[in-house]
Image: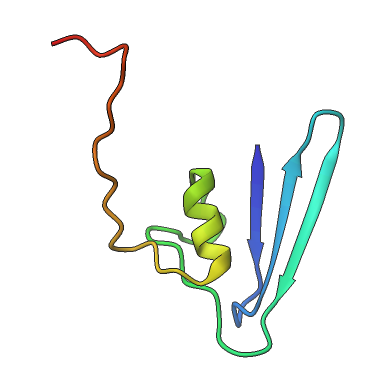
Length: 78
């Protein structure tokens, strides 16, 4: 479980993550630029991000036009 908090100018972000036995808080501040506005996010709205999307968001990669290709799943039936 992860909670994502961003300030109004979007140059600081805090992540509150539940670890095995307690919460861990991560904080990142940008010297230049800003974090991307999460698509569909309105004020006080909960959203769900996969781990890879979260890493891209924190790294500065735009997640708006990402298309995930289908992967082989050994459990899928034809």
